[in-house]
Length: 174
Image 1: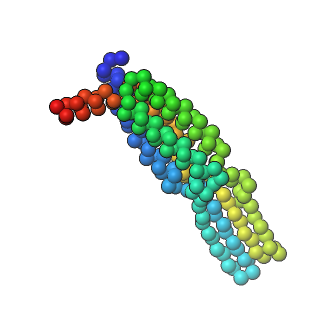
Image 2: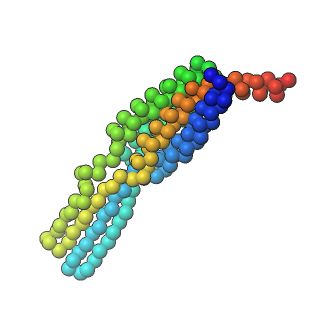
Image 3: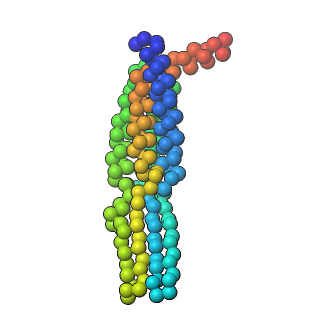
């Protein structure tokens, strides 16, 4: 493979890895489920609105997304720091893990149909309305996984920087 193509693959993979890393951390930090509750008592004109959100760890199986994301971070790093066939193998494994991670995201995707705009009425003069919406973190998760998988694949195809690191260390030691 020509050296220029190899460098382009590595730089493109590194840029995607950085974007995927930021999106992955954002998907963990931002809420996956938004809950809005509005309570009204028409008799006395009372109205109260409450907003709550749940992170990925509050969902059933949410820790599995964290495990997949951390493994993907490690595979991207390993593909970067190795060279040759090992880097290509790790890059392919990173892409496969990102696709498998999509199955995890689908399995833990917040169920918003169960409470979507449910209204509870008490004796006709008091109401409580609950609305569930998908949070930003859940939307960013599959994007982060696919970008990290593509980064691992590009870095793997570029052959990693293991050879370059060995030359730098040898030159520094000399």
